[in-house]
Length: 91
Image 1: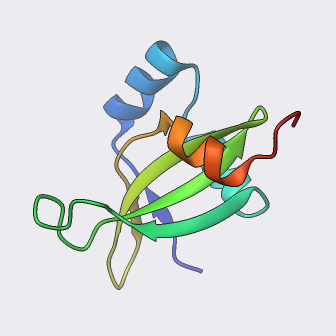
Image 2 (image 1 turned 180 degrees about the vertical axis):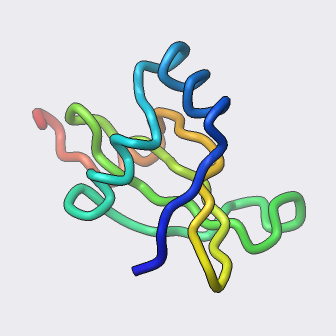
C-alpha cells in the first residue's frame, strides 16, 4: 500500500474548522473506506479521485491524487450526497 501524504497546514486548518484530520482518515480508510469514486469534475481536477469514509456515523468525502509514490490527500468535507447513497436510515 502506498503511503499517505498531506499538507500539514491544511491538516491543522481542518482540525480547527471541521474537527477532523487526515490522521483520522488514514486510520479509518483501512477499515471504514466505503468507496472510491472519480472526482465529478475531471476537467477542473484531472485524475483526482474521492474516498468516501465513515467518521462518527457520517459520510465524509476525501479528494486525493495518486502518484506512483504516494496518495496525497487534498481536503475532507462532510457529504450529504454520499450519506444518502451509502448510509441506511437509522444508522
